[in-house]
Image 1 (cartoon, rainbow, N blue to C red):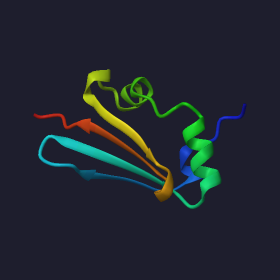
Image 2 (cartoon, rainbow, N blue to C red):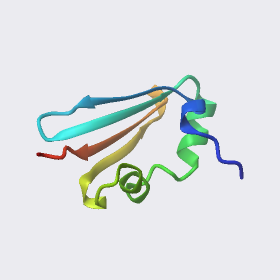
Image 3 (cartoon, one colour):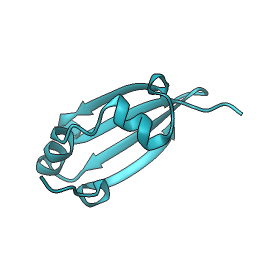
Length: 81
């Protein structure tokens, strides 16, 4: 299996506020093939996201796919200073 950077599959990768204590990342794909490839990779897990962002697994509150929107949403607790 070949590793492909997410930036080559996704058309949009953005972060946005999800209230005062949460941050959501949207990963959107141009077509179902790219969405299916990314989701089937198994890399959208709490463990993988925690490692990517350098946080504890408990900080990742949700990860879910939106197949009709060809998107993946990852939500995590915002670090408070």
